[in-house]
Structure formats: structure tokens, C-alpha cells
Image (cartoon, rainbow, N blue to C red; front, side, top):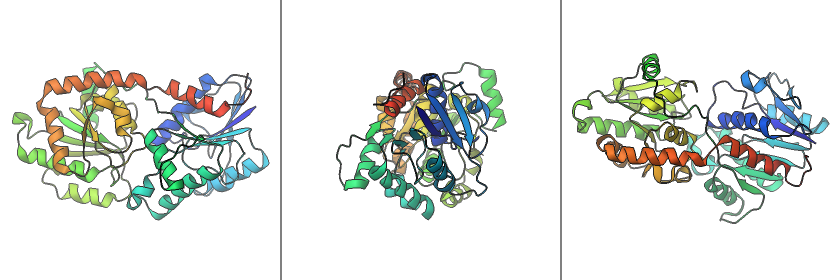
Length: 382
């Protein structure tokens, strides 16, 4: 049996949520797939770092394609036409139009259906086309949450209905996200990014869908009320992430803020440094308008950092009772909820304990084991 996996997104060095999922899942599948099954990783350029280290029954197949676009639809499709695997697994959103009968894809979200203005026209059309077409043609589909499964089913019927081809498999988190006691290293990382305690932080693209503008406005309200006593004037906001679609609005609200000097934008931060920043933060703010899963919430809880997040989409499936929830459109509510954590140490400690217990339910090992079960169901691999 041959299992093919699209590793092109996992091979990106600066990984966002989907790329992290693809990378972590492939790394765990290396430990799960037996040696009598051959695995081929398809990529548009040579595999890098740990991804290139493979078991004896795994191989890399570089499908060179000089143009930057349409690698999936042209180059990978051609490979599927001339040399298809028995099962093809696509961990990230878009599958090749030519594919084996037994093709599985992970649909992380269908945010473009609800928030079309958060995407350019091509991203909007391409992601929705892929999701709708997957419902009609693919063997199986994986979603990271019950929320995404329901959203996906709505694309097909306009209402909710069960579909036995869709499987819910929740993400895990990298174990480097943990409570860190190395204060010297934390201080070193804070200096590297020019951020000082106390600060609140958020992680994700700086864009409309992540609700970055409302995070900034809530921060302004907190500073204006000046009810943090001696720490009021020094509180900072750390926005980790690269500019996303519609960043102009984010840039404008920061540029015109009287507290712009206290808003730190380091851009993309390495996965090695991010856990230290999360450990140092007073709290983690993630009032995203739409999430298929919300991996940063899980990572923050694993670091022992209290979380304020949105009461919409999949986020309550991740955080459960371990977070405080807000209406993401209500700026005053976001500010008030952040303030509660800053003022109430007992509340902070309660949610930290709940968060550390909550994350025990999630692991990449379980995610990989469940995914392999979907891939090889009704297949003889032993």
C-alpha cells in the first residue's frame, strides 16, 4: 500500500496555524505508520529541517514547478494522473482536481463564506470552491472541530445534517508550549523583541478576521481608564503576527492611537521564542471573529497564561471552562474582561489551573493516531 501526503505547506519555514498542523501531523505519522506501508511526501521544493528526516519506508518526491501558483492543480494533478498512490492525504485546504478515488482532505474552516471581505477575491473563491467540491467528490474529509463540520455541511445543504464522510479530529499542541521557570531566558527573549512587563498579547495575522482593530481599541480603553494603579502607564500590547488581508485598517488605528508607543508589532515570531513570550504575558487575548480550531488558545493555556477569547465559532470547543469569553464585536466587553484578569489574581489562578488541566485532552499523538485510522479504514496495512 502507498500513502501519498501533500507536504508542501508543512515545508514552509515561517509556519502559521495550518502549516503547523501539517508539519506536526506528518512528524507524528512517521511514528505511527508501519514499515510495510510506503509513504510518499509530495513537495514543490526539497524538504527542510526535521521534515526531511524520514523512516526507511518514507520518501520525498519533489515536483518542481517554477511558477508560484497552481502547483496543486497542475503539477500535483499530473503526478496523480501518471503515478497515483493508493490513498492521497491533503492536510491543508486545497486538493488537486485530478486525484485518486481514495483522497482525504482536512478542511480547517470555511471562513470565506461568512467573512468574504476578510479575503481577496481569489482566496475567497478558491477556498470555497475547494470545500464545496470536496463535499461532492472526495472519499473522506477531516475537520478540526464540530463547528467546522457544521459550517461545511451548510455549504452543501443550507442547513445542518450529519454526513458520514466527515470526521472530527482535534488538533494537538507542541510540547514546547509549557510553564517555563527559566526567568533569565524569559528576560532575554523580552529584550530581543523590545517588550516589557506587564503586557497582554495576541497571536495571529493582523487582520479583520482576527479582530485586531478591536483588540487595539480595547487596549486604549484600558489605558484611558487608568485603573491599573501603578502599572497603568506601563502596560503594553504585544501583537504577534504578520499583516493579513485588510491590514491597512489595523495600521491606521495603531498609527492614530495615543498609545502607539505601547503597541509592539514584532511580526512573525519563531516557534522557539513564542512560548517564552506567552509565559511572560499577563494574559492572552484572542477575540477572533472566526476560527476553525484556535490553536494559539491551546498553546497559551499550556503556558499557564489566562485566556480571553470570543464566544463564537470553535473556540469554546478548545478552551471549555478554562477561558473568559466575550462578544468579539463589543469593544467595551473585551476591555472589561481583560481588566477582570488584571485585577483579580484569584480568577487568574483559577483559569490557569483549569487551562493546564484542559490541554491534557489534546495531543498531536492522538491527532495522528485518529487521522491514520481515517486514512487506512477498510485498508489492510499489516
